Amino acid sequence: MADTKNLQLMAPVSGLAMAITDVSDPVFSQKMMGDGFGIDPTDGQIAAPVDGRIMMIADTKHAIGIKADNGAELLVHLGIDTVELKGAPFEIDTAMDARVKAGDLIGSMDLDAIKKAGKKTTVIVAITNSKEVLDHLDVNAGEVNRGEEVAVMTPKPMAATAAAAPKNESKYAATARQIIADVGGSQNVNSLIHCITRLRFYLKDEQLPDDDTVRNIPGVIDVAHGNGQYQV
Image (cartoon, rainbow, N blue to C red; front, side, top):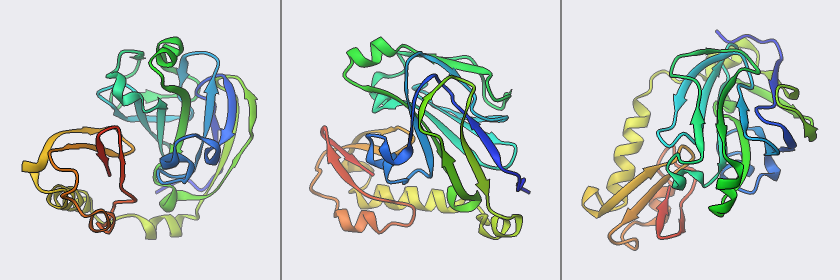
């Protein structure tokens, strides 16, 4: 069961910290991925923001998931739209299920390479299970050094957290099947990129899906069109 003590979130990078609502990506700024914060980095060394275990490493190395000891699930997202760089500017210095302490170096990002590719370098930390575990988050905006406290999470009481926990994970498989069906079936999909925050479909016929139908699928927050992609 989750710990109800406040959790200090440390800066994964040095730079200028901001509330997540100030991040220039609507998926994050509208808290679709949960509450959190962003940092415009001045250096590319990445540290764990909390004590916990590595629960996800993106194939493209632009995102790392950490489950904190109090049950919070944190996504450390390196840059904006950097999935398209296919891992080139990133190095990961940890492994799945590895135990990490706040401040441990877990990777690095080449800021110059990301900027040359026309992408933003903002590092985002989002508590992806905010609805289940978060009461509120206090963020200290301003200059911060890697490993310094940048936010404090006040968790929900244990009873509320337990009551909100999902009974099983089958809803994800059901959501995935329905999305594929409602974008026109697998026969309408040329390719698909899963970039942690959204599904990026390259469809044969982008007019085939009904946006409102896809938006109404349980688990789907919104639909967007851009860069030749149908984004869910």
